[in-house]
Image 1 (cartoon, helix red, strand yellow):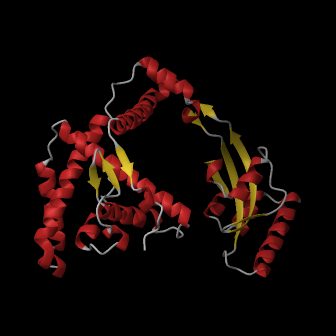
Image 2 (spheres, helix red, strand yellow; image 1 turned 180 degrees about the vertical axis):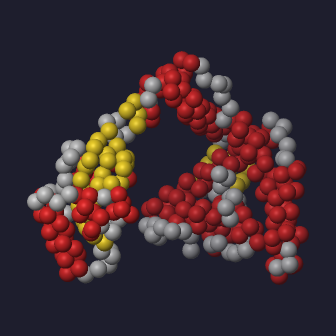
Length: 324
């Protein structure tokens, strides 16, 4: 995913004053071999990344937000280094891709007041942006390029990452759910627990769990006698997971379990132990995972070389201040 891709049109068509700090005179957020990277460009990228990162999250504290801005500055430096390397290698923007993207934006926004007023300027900015995106796509592919793994590579990866090729333990559960909305008062929750304890006593007294589930459970599995089939334990609610972990096949919980949906009685019908898949069965997947990791390692090493070959400085004073 490109650093700027998500909110390109927002930045280019709704370019608001991000912060007064972006107007600092002279210099830039970074210099790369004496060439400035502007504060404006940094603030636009920081604004876009913040919208993506914190849009659904709690407002970050000061130290978290400052660390985030520093990370954005480093990303911007990497972007500049990659663009410079792409041009050094003689890569050329993909004109068909650029024309297609420009046509999409023009078709989407043509006729709006802002497009009528600033459309030509916006198209020039978009053209510059997509030219860079085209170059970045090409250079990323080259920086990540690795040879096909040998059989020894795949075998070594498999044995070093056995957990990735092991089917986790599965449990076959039966449940009886007495639903309670999360915001219900304590009396409602207590009443559900009392009812669950009564059902639990009936089952211990000889009532079939499946019959009790059909009669009382609100879970979709009720029609099957509460049988949920085999599940990976990781999908279970935290408290339910702890209870199920302590039950052997054939055992039922000692007390009702409170979960988000209400109160649950649970029985472990069966357990399937973790199963390691043989290399011959998962060879293709192992090769794919090896390639993914090898490509990432190659990319990180290439970025490190580009950085080592360049003189890079960041405006530390600027990065230690919160925007106005």
